[in-house]
Length: 184
Image (cartoon, rainbow, N blue to C red):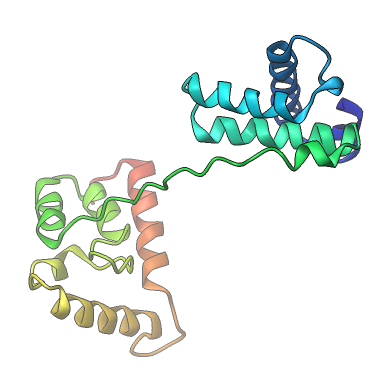
């Protein structure tokens, strides 16, 4: 199995995890894993779930065992018996306009204000709207969206000269302030 993974260029961490998963399976069935049956695989997955193992860990073991049975042992009929466990994805927290306004007003250091403003202060936009524009937002955010888009477009295109990206410029400024600790 280790040779098969080496030939395919698996990283050391992946090899270590795969060997650990196959070793755990062998310990569970109490014999060599090349003598495993479909029922052994089903019981092993049931044991993992009942012991409180989280879905990402179970799925990692499924990948390892699929590789072992498909590539190393050339027994794909057993690998088809393994099932991936679905798990719910977490939805990221989105701040309301009021929460963002409070956050920006609570920060006193200019470098943090610049970092928050660069990170996309307008809710749902991710455009790096400036903190000064946030004060005039309506509850629905309609005015903020249109003003922010117009301001971002003007900043990208520039009134004269070559096009520039205002968000990238603000990000570089924020990174320089945070790295240097300057209070500008």
